[in-house]
Image 1 (spheres, rainbow, N blue to C red):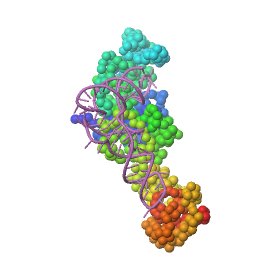
Image 2 (image 1 turned 180 degrees about the vertical axis):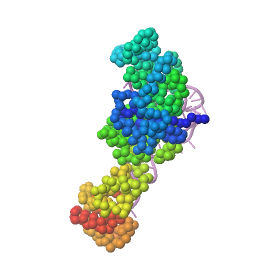
Image 3 (image 1 turned 135 degrees about the vertical axis):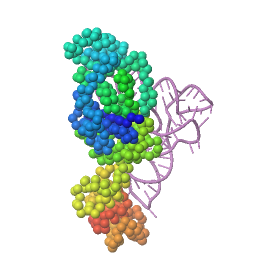
Amino acid sequence: MPQKVRVRFAPSPTGPLHIGGVRTALFNYLFAKKHHGDFVLRIEDTDQNRYVEGAENYIVEALNWLGIPFDEGPSQEGEFGPYRQSERKHLYEKYALELIEKEHAYYAFDTPERLDFHRKDHEAKGKTFIYNWHNRLKLDNSLSLSNEETKAKLDSGAPYVVRFKSPQDEKLLLHDIIRGAIEIDTNVLDDKVLFKSDGMPTYHLANIVDDHLMEITHVIRGEEWLPSLPLHQLLYNAFEWAAPEFAHLPLIMKPVGKGKLSKRDGEKGGFPVFPLSWNESRGYRESGYFPEAVLNFLALLGWNPGTEQELFSLQELVETFSLERVTKSGARFDPEKTKWYNHQWLQKKPNEELASLFDSVLKEIPQDVRNEGYVEKVVELIKERADFVTDFWELGDYFFEAPTTYQEKAVKKQWKDDTPTIISQLTMVLEPLTDFTSENVEAKVKNWIGEQGLSFGKVMPPLRLVIVGDMKGPHLFDIMALLGKAESLARMEKAIRVLG
RNA sequence: GCUCCAUUAGCAUAGUGGCUAGUGCAUCCGACUUUCUAUCGGAAGACAAGGGUUCGAUUCCCUUAUGGAGUACCA
């Protein structure tokens, strides 16, 4: 019977989740749901020095906002809890000892200062200090010391760490779902610390132990972990545990320049790098992005379905996703494209929903101009050219307030000596209309232009200026119809007074 | 420096041992009987370089270059 798929997202609560972390979470979620498995959130807080207040809540809130909640995690306990490593602290030591027992690990007493000295010393000579087979016997540890000496040190309470004894002269054949086979020579590996002198495990130990205990079947994480894969594989071997499958996701790179995407890029480029706001940094949510759009662009960053479809709902992503179709190389982040995704999702939203979102910025506008579905009709006309709900006001302010000023450049270009006369005559044409629909007004105006032997250019642009105050907006007659006869005529008369 | 990973147009990517290398964003140009950051139509633009293997390579192999990651008692 095949094992149930279980994946985990294991962030460190050292700050807000950034967009790369969110994508890792998303891919884990998609993979889990595709295979009807479990998505586990595990908080990797083994480094007390880097703990940041509020970061864990932030992570949970971000996942919820995006609609990719975890099945098990803190405050959502399953049978594999607890889900914070700090609360699992007591578990790890015995595994470290087991490895020492099996001679896959050893005690090391070297002080951080001493190691630092070695590193600096090597660096000065143009060499790299690696704590492993070639020098471990010259360093201060239970391999170089006799059993008695080691015991004496331990008994005296001397601080120690536990290091992994990486094997010598072995060729390790690793497998990654995205990258395929990876071969590595164990001689270049160093003896990583597994257990710290403060009594906490390092990431490496805690990670392997927890993944095993939590019955994780697939480890899907960022490419920055690829160099740790040999160590992790070796640890599974040492414990004689079956290793999960691994998939290392490509990194998300800066829009311009070198390196991976960072918080500063967002500040420079004026786009969010966090799902939710964090202190001064605005999040995608606060910038007006829909969770659907964020999910959508994130999914297509480093993954594609192999078809030309670009717009996916979460459900469609779950159905279509596969790790085999994840790209191998880093993906440069394109903030422009994220807007396009939001634009697309905005078009899909019902006018009613958009209107109610828009309504909240409209609270200063008197109720009587926005009753009877007026806002919905406005939204219908302007949404096509909007990327965000927050664009609506800029795009359609004239639906709520008559122009108080007229765009200068347009006035210069469009407002000729005879324009006031034309507009004035036009008011008289429109005055008797009882059926003030877009089609009817359009027919009347065009007809009149024809009768007068005028050109469209002489009438239409100034008329737009008069109604809108600017040379923008959707089809002019749609605007006039929605504003209504009284308001349209009032604006025409006002413009004649103001612009003369 | 060392180790590992990658390399199709400005960006994200599809794809193939052999027809004009496909798509989206961005760009430019047209159209919508003259608004537009919308829509529609069109255009331009790529297989990093050099060696092999092969009848033939963007596709397979090697080298170089470039980019990325790691190299902590951080994750």
